[in-house]
Each structure stands twice: as C-alpha cells, then as structure tokens.
Length: 412
Image (cartoon, rainbow, N blue to C red; front, top):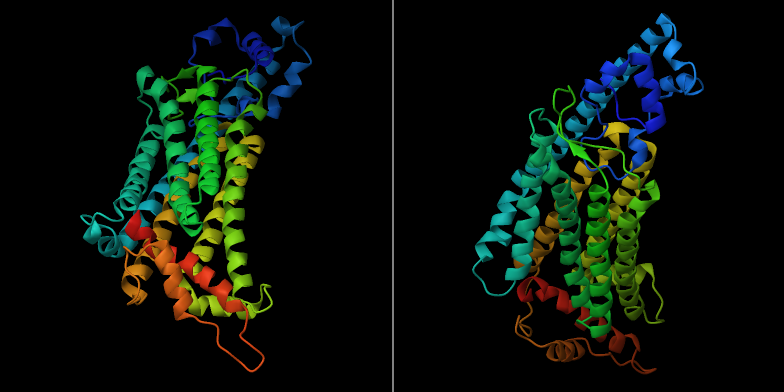
C-alpha cells in the first residue's frame, strides 16, 4: 500500500517495490478537511532513499527493498493509529455535546421552549435551537463518516464541502448571538452595526471561500480497500499559508468584537466612579447596580477568549501535525462553540426571567428614551453641602445602556 507522497518520493518507492505497486490502492493521510499540504509529507524513514534517486534505484539490493517495504507498512500502521486517535477525539466531542444537552435540558425547557410561542425573542430562540441541535447532528455525521470504510465516491466528493460549510455555520452562528448583545448595548448605533456586519461578512466569505478553493484544487477518494477509515484528500498544490486566509480574518474580527465589549465594560466602570476612572469600588457597584452588565462582561470574556484561543490552537495543529492528526482540532471546535454560546444564552435568559426582579417603571415595550428618563429620575444626584456629586449623570447613561440588555431576549 503506497502512501500519498510527493512525486519524487513516490517515484523512489515505486522503483523499490516494483511497478505492481501502482495497482495497489493509495493511502491518503487525511480523514477530515486538510488545509495543510504538509499533512501528506513522508516520514523521515523514507529520507535515506532520496539521495539515491533517480539513478541506481532499479538495482537496489534485496535488503534495501525489504527495508522500503517495511517502511511503507510501518507508515500505514502509523496512519491507522492516527486515524483511530482522531476518531476517539471526535467521539469524545460528540459525547461532550450530548452530555451538555442532557445537563441543560431542564433549563432549556423553561428559558426556550416554554417561551417559544411568544412573539418577542423568537429570533434568538431559533438561533439557539439551530446551534444546539445542528451541532449534535453535525458531529454525529462527522463521526460516522470518519469511522466508515465503505463510502462511495459520491459521498466523499460532498463530504469535505459539507465539513467546511458546517464548520463555518457552527462557528459563525454563535458570533451572531454575541453580536446581538454588543449592538444592543450600543443601542443599535448605525456605525457599530455597519462595522459588525462588515466584519461578519468578511468572516463568512473568507471561511467558505478558502475552504471551497482548497477542496476544488485537490482530489478526493473513498477508503476503497484500505484499512484507513473515512474519506481522504490528495496533496494540493496550494501552499500551507493559503489556509490562513480562513483563520486570520476570523480571529481579527473576534478580537474587534472583544474590544467593543471591553470598551463598554470600562465605560461603565468609569461612569460609576466619581473621578471617572475604573476602580475596584466601581466594579463592586456595577455588580450591585447593574448586574446585567456584569453578566454581559463576564460572558464576553469567556466566549471571546476561549474562541480566539481555540482558533489559534487549531492553526498550530494544522501546521505542526501531520496525517489525520492535523484535523484533530476540528471536532473540538465543533463542540466548544455550541456549548459556550448555548450556556451563555441560558444563563442570561434564566437571570432575566427568573432571577432579576422586574422594574415596576420599565416594561419590555418601554422605549430607550423612556428608560433613560426613568433611570435619571430613579438615580438622582444627592445634594451635599459642597454641591451635588458628579457621577450620577454618567451613571444614568450607564444604567440606560445596561437596561437595554434586560430586553435583548424579549426584543430579538
């Protein structure tokens, strides 16, 4: 069984093993989306043959031919072990998603399904359902294909395109749910909305475009008679840096989303301080006066830090691991994003509808202008002998901005 090697190295092995090796089904090195040509480079045990090519290969001794045959068999065994490890990680990711679904199902009923027919909040609830259950189906199909040795060429031709599409959906829909929160805090200011829409469009375009171009430039084959499960992809002529076109824009966009969240967070801290500077005291006041903003900041830290770290780790895996192991980060990302964003959604929904006491002065239909007025009157600046303190006007704006979070789930 001849592995998928660069042309010159493949010629060496063919010369050593004889022309009958051409009739054997080739072994590819990828069982999932392969954005790195380095995943098909040969093991170091082949390098001692490279110096003898192209002259003299037809006259190698019997021991050298046996050594080359043994090297090929060892490489096949290594590929089988790597594929097995990838499948174990995929099954673990699927188990993680299903286990989290079971743990959160009772909370999901009260926050999502019991409020399903309410006109307000229907969009966020539908996105939640798509992210939650599409991730389970996606990982289940991912595991079944990667563990199968009886796949047709038609299935494999579609498989990699579906992997690219599903990965984009699983990672971008959670971003939409977080962008709803960010834009709500900024009161849907057109400039911020335009910025987030442009960044999201770049994420979507680069993710799908890079993946589809890479797949279209490669040849995909089914398992055939090999012992390695899953569909496999041949070496592409595109350089490894080409795949950065899918990951770098997404990381940059999420960094900007994170900065927008931090800007609001520190603005609140400054507005709650008499001197207009963030402090531990203002942080404690924010937890008491504006618990919704505290949840918004905490959720943003958790989501964006883990999401960015996961993508950076996946880039390192793609460039430093070979064979099936280069795709070991894909099932982890497919599990991490849905679990994070659905838990954050349930946490915010539970707080808004079952923990936070409703304000008697504000209802879901109250306008932003009225909310601002209510908080201005509800938190007037007290008078002292030296005059009124100055942080109350800023605090009223902060409370008005934070109160918009109270109705994110109701309005969207």
